[in-house]
Length: 208
Image (cartoon, rainbow, N blue to C red; front, side, top):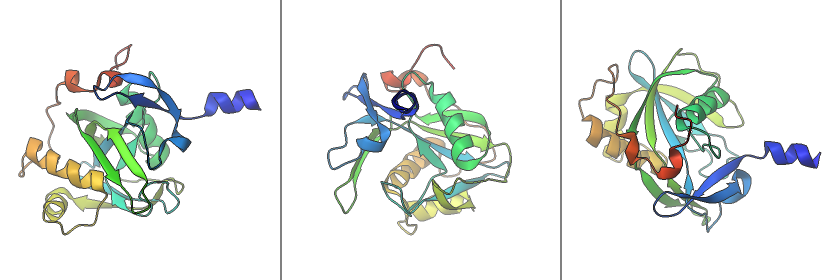
């Protein structure tokens, strides 16, 4: 039993301020008032009509329970390629396969503190992708609700402070609008960002 638990425990990658790997920690234990800097990702999932999938975090989540946020987030495992981690997480959390995955914000980093003192502290590259289907099957352990929204209206509402959203999503939307442009056609392609700007720990071998 002990050996099985050891092989299935989910680990996150710990980082120094330059983005190099310094070790690992159990995901279940990493978030506290002294959360160490670690590696994550955020993904914005669009359908073929250009609508963005928003999700509301499950009420029992350790951080920001019940809060609306971007499509999904996660943590790559040790030596797991970002693309593989994103596809894995999307399938696990939403029951959807992704296409046209593109890196947009390779160097995004944020910190946020909940009312109870729990802290997020991540280097969190941001990606956009297309859902292969508009029918999602969210895992209730992760997602309390979901909805497809119009990207221009959503991003404008976030920038104006009219949309209640997770702190990382608020920061990411501002950066996405800056990089993609306020009039970005969300049905179109995205020119990927330079992957050499990723935290060094996010670049693993073999390549994706």
